[in-house]
Image 1 (cartoon, helix red, strand yellow):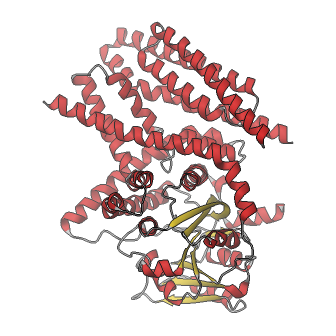
Image 2: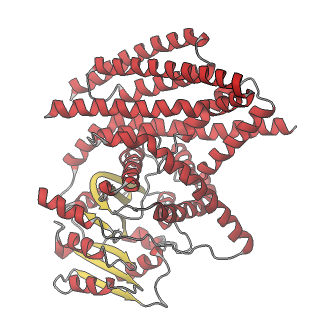
Image 3: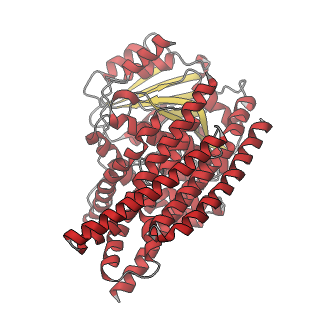
Length: 433
Length: 131
């Protein structure tokens, strides 16, 4: 009886992992087939005359090392300044973030700073963004994290998509600024290539659930207000909003050539903190939205399928671990005749969820399409980030269940530490140019 | 643009033909390697042909990489299975069991590494061509 249960469990788990494997394969093929066509079309059809008033929200909690960099980037944007409002939300910072932001606000009348005190602020990014939304006057609301550095014409590229009334939100591409710094930043850079260059591009090309990544993106103000802004009870407020936008019947477009540079986490400790928050938040979204996605009349079958796979992706490292344990038990006790082939699928799956859950072939093709020459050598090492994600996701799931049972609030926002080391890469880039 | 697309399609078709031939050879080699290894080689061939062949680069180079990949896969599996057989004779059956459990993962070590090297080769030749 136990063996039969193990066999059934093993089959279900391998089926689930194979579904993700097929999804990634389809994504990679889609990007290979559509990339040239899409980029050329995007460039030729972009409507440069469409320049509505936009508000750019920059939440910042103790970001003195990086806030100057993004504000400098904002002053260099080519978007019409009369139609632009930049709002820095100094979210109960105890360092000089507020003073630095004020220093930029004085000479630039389109930059505003909101100071939140300790009692009002420090409750996480969603809370800060909602505060910024109250002051925003723009027709389109963008949000950028404080550690980012935008391309000069990024707003024009992103705004152009809103010419289509069905588009509710837009997402640009995130590229790692401090990639050469160390092994962690290099691996994160590869993850980003898989996640944006291939995953996001493919979802956009195939008309699936394009994801808003929490930064380098924007929304229609009316839509955002009708959805009551960002949900402060969810740690992955970006994924939550992604699904609320899609469920409301709007599209999210991904613009690959609208690049923004981020300062990636530089240590395994910070990697843990960031991914733990993402995993927990994503799991919260899975519990909140899975049923709604299934029932939605605004989503087509393929969107529902992709939505469910996206919502549940952070459970997969836990399931891979489980399937490995079940597989070993089956092998030791009573291997069924079909076992060998299914057993071989486990490591494929293992390598299908490396990095930010993009498989090796996806990362490789993404890097190739980006014109990279040396990044491929690190692809085998992405297995370590996946293995690292197993305890991260397992702990996130365990903590989520514990908090559900005990009723304790588990939404502590563990902020990612930004060192400002990315500044030197901007300086070196500007010297080269 | 159209010419580029035609080249991609031609490479994919020829690549799949080469992949089918290689797959038949692997099936014939079932007596040399175990069934998991043969399955892994087929997965490698399928992914390689469908995802690497549509990329820019010389067709001959892609075919050469595909064949080298298969030779490495066969050698890798032969060496590891011989090693596990000998180790099991000397140190007990446990090592053989351990090998079978870890075998698929060991296979992916060469698959992913070779994949990375292949893309490096194709990307560097592309850069040289552009320059």
